[in-house]
Image (cartoon, rainbow over all chains, first blue to last red; front, side, top):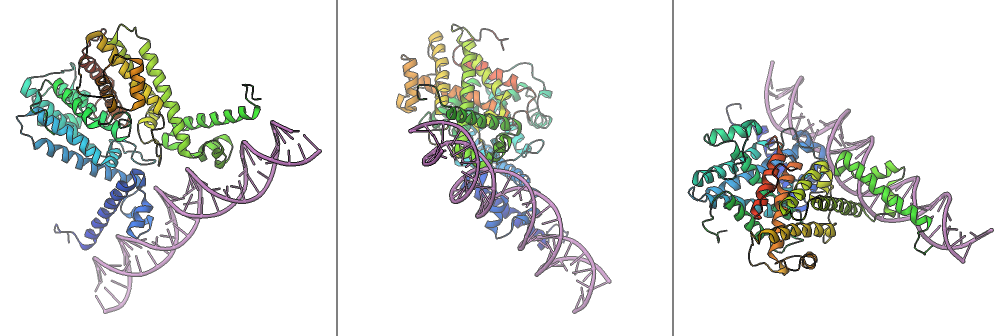
Length: 241
Length: 241
DNA sequence: TAGATCTACTACACGGCGTATAGTTGCGAC
DNA sequence: GTCGCAACTATACGCCGTGTAGTAGATCTA
């Protein structure tokens, strides 16, 4: 052991750790985030609840790990959807990102609650958030969309007077490294885009929108087309998606 | 008794019922929505938990009542803020509504979670939502803002092809009664406005925005000014609020 | 191969929760 | 004055997260 491969013990340990997460996600999918309980997981695995403490120091630790995993898979899906559209179609890339955002949320409402809501009874997120890395990737991805748009049509919505110091250093670092020519205003615009994509989806997932309107998807599409226009872009294919 | 005044028993009953709600809200303000527990309320009142079942059939019943109360007070605040701005300044009225929406949420984050998030461990909202009336008032209020704007500058963002049947009958009724000349598209636009106001505020309340940006209020203001412009209005006083 | 060690797990206990049931007490109405 | 009923207590059940003490077995060492 020690030569790069893991010992049998380490392998078993990693498998058990993964099984705990898998079962937790299954319980969440079946009964909502509130159904994630150490006792229920242990029951499902044929163990006692105490055994899980050998893998996660506390229930909140487990939940934080789940949040990071789920958030990462969301961002993977967003980036993949964006990259499926040619780079010379900035409007299409924004729409692809936005559409995937909503369809992922509708397909994984519990995951959405886990990331963006109160995940579980008394859960307290750790400092910096349980999935800071994934969240920064998401914000940087949005900023990339703004960058594409500005490259195509020039700055729009340039909320003036922002400094790099107005944003999280890690996020600012990511953005400046990837898009050296971009002004800090672009991050402000991208955070506003984030909010705009989040709003209707959040209302829908939590059951507020469906109580008022028959077709949330249509509202969302109209809103996203408006967003694209406000970036100065013209949607190339209005019938897409 | 029976002559309009209530008997001593009825009065005591109403007072106790109100005290339960008051204490529940206090516990929520102190420890988050998750801190609302029948046992904690009873402890605070010097009673046993079972006694509360004489007033609310179940914990979810109590929570639903709280949601309705809190939601109503939010809508009251929104309408008051709007009405403090002269009717001939539609942009100002939109901005007043939007600003109150955020400042109420920041001042009452627990109430915001109660209304728009997962309020409490295993809470399941009743059919139609726990505060349908308040929610319809909110949506109708937003539609009123759209109506003001359209009266001033003519329809913008007219997402075509909506029917009254695309929306909740009660909401549609409220709107058609109050604004007989308005087309159903206006409701679609107002729901999109709702989402746009909700997005950034929701991200901020749940701690996502503050991790990325120093000044969420500024982002929100820029976003709302953009919203006002997309309604075809020109903000009269950019320094307001 | 025999013994020491350390890991993974069980068993159990504590206090919290929502909720149901049965029993008690005292006000209100006749 | 007495009856009835509403309001409340007491208690119990099964959940929950989380500690602690103890144990079986795998792994390492000599």
